Amino acid sequence: MIRRLAFKLGGLAAAILPGSRGAWGEAMAAEIATIDGDWDAARFAAGCFIAGLKERAADFDTRFAAGLWSLATASAAFAAFHIRNAWGGARALLGGPDAFYETLWRNDPTVAAAYRGAIPMVASCFLLLGLVHLCGAYLLARRRFRAFALSWCAALAIATFVVAIELSVVWTLDGVPSEFFALILQSLGVPALLLWKERTR
Amino acid sequence: MTRRKKLSAQTVAVLQVLVQRPMQWRYGYELSKELALQSGTLYPLLMRLTDAGLLESQWQPPAKPGAPARHAYRLTRSGLATAHAAVAAQFDTPNGALPVRS
Image 1 (spheres, one colour):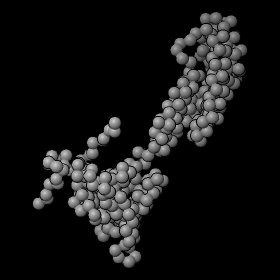
Image 2: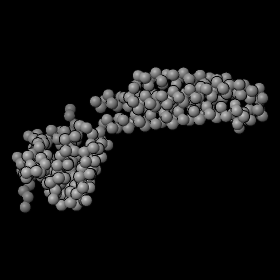
Image 3: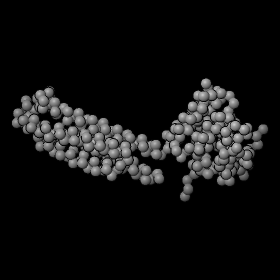
Image 4: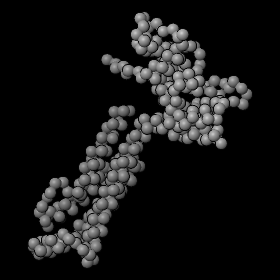
């Protein structure tokens, strides 16, 4: 039982090690097989498993992939945020509650009417922006950087368009609009990752 | 100008053990026992030393029939020089002479 656990841990260590360290996984497994005591073998194998984890964490390709997946996950989260905004707009059109509209109506009914008129276009843009960000997240995860650059440009155009519509209705700008958050993150993160890869290789 | 990284105490310990019998091939488990070093620490060190060209490795035929071949290690020529320098620096002995173990 303990011996089997030791072999299992050795196999796991070999599987975790980066491909370039394949021979070391075999070396560890061979050592485990030569150790007489079952508990000694298990202790040694547990150490090998830790060694595998350390090597995996130190592996450049793994770190690069982790960076890309983090950016892709963040992009997908922003996509969900934009799609949720689109859903909020659609709900408001269907008679759902809209606190912003109520406030506008109390202050200036003309602006409120313009706002209501812009909702279909703004909600459509949010939906499109969310879908483009989802597409960008997928492309990042698949390492298709040229296609990602195209999707980024498309997202920038949509975000600029939707912010322009919003500003044409209510002319207030408090900091960077949330439509640009994902674009800013991607425009900093992706070049930084690629530069790091270029310098490391 | 090349920058030299300071060797860790554990790396120096591995070099110190290997330099005692430089021509002999040593095994991972044996080194782990002798150094009282966990395999989780030892193997990454062996990998780094091999990457740096200080250690060479070889698959050795099994001692007993049916047993698996084992991966064995020993210092290369530059590894030997580094080991002498590291041990000398650690013990601060003149001319890189190794301290004699009692």
